[in-house]
Image (cartoon, rainbow, N blue to C red):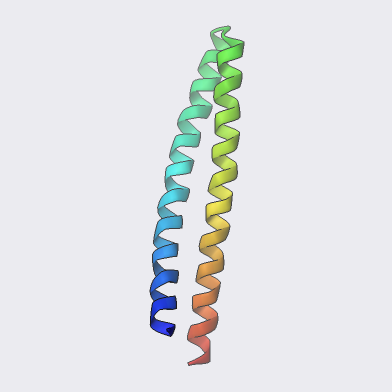
Length: 81
């Protein structure tokens, strides 16, 4: 059972790390696009992309917390052995 849990936690860290990086890259692209649209006078479209970037930041944070929780569980389990 411990082996399965450890494998799950390692996979969780890998997935959350990938998700955080993807969210950050996508967030940066959305934010840059919103900035360009805002400067071009397309306020409504800029607001949509700005909202998208905020949601991506939120999801990146959620994934990041999941990864930190999994890493903490692995460290706690590793210190007992």
